[in-house]
Image (cartoon, rainbow, N blue to C red; front, side):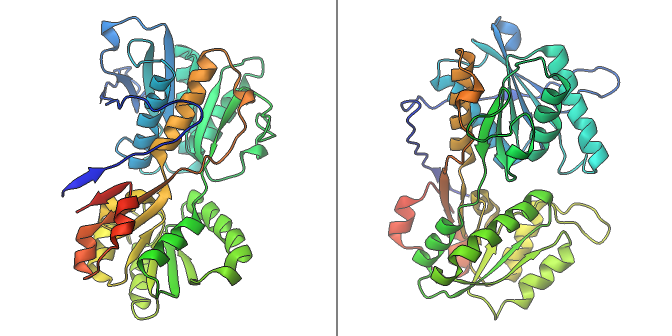
Length: 375
């Protein structure tokens, strides 16, 4: 599938930097008990003697596109601050794998203990934590267990209000050495872009899995829609949430003649009748194959799975934002000097192959504004 990528970022914290390709080789140390499963060390670490250690803890697994983008963005942000991987710091990553293999509350907490053990043993100079599980079970748990320490944490990808955690408390002035970014789905932008492509559309069905982050995002949407419903040109017919593949199929088929657009959020936690995880790409393939309704993905990477439009958080740019803050912290500033905000980076994507399947033409003005176009 042909693809071109256009990345644009305008940030007050740093001027545009040189593009950087980050290559990581999986290197799982053989410790006997499997305790460090999910750990990665960056390629070339044995060829230099960097003075700093940077640890990135991801909630999910290698290959999860959103966290891969966050990781590469963090490295780019550090680079823009003058910190080059391998030369200036040793990059270590840990994947908690809490979406596929370690999904129960007990297993998630246990993976958090493994990451905390890495921190205590390896003593990184800064820790980045991506998504809610890494924030709660690693960053917050570590700070609560070590009230005397000032290890800096930078987080990203949280749907909840992190001020509920005592080490944070205040979004403008965190209580401890932790800051980061909020993740908020840009519903206004999603509806606006959908209407630019489909100006005659009046109805949209929203659907997602029922993972904890999706449940939180639905609550966020309901709050937003309660304020904007009267001014919205799109009527939201329903917001279906399910972890059942059969129920997902039923909802999609039920609305084939009842909606103009299908707003799709996350489908990474959909399971079959045996409780086994259905690969997200398979969920997307079924949806595309059996639906004639144009999809508007609320996560931009949905387009890579073949869906028509994606309007969502730019995780790469968000990673850069966090990496730049991390660079400032490594230079001596406290994380408490940086308010916790939603940086508002949005990525627009289209899939021309899907447009051809639906016999649709994407307006040129929309394609010109796109960050990514596939097909």
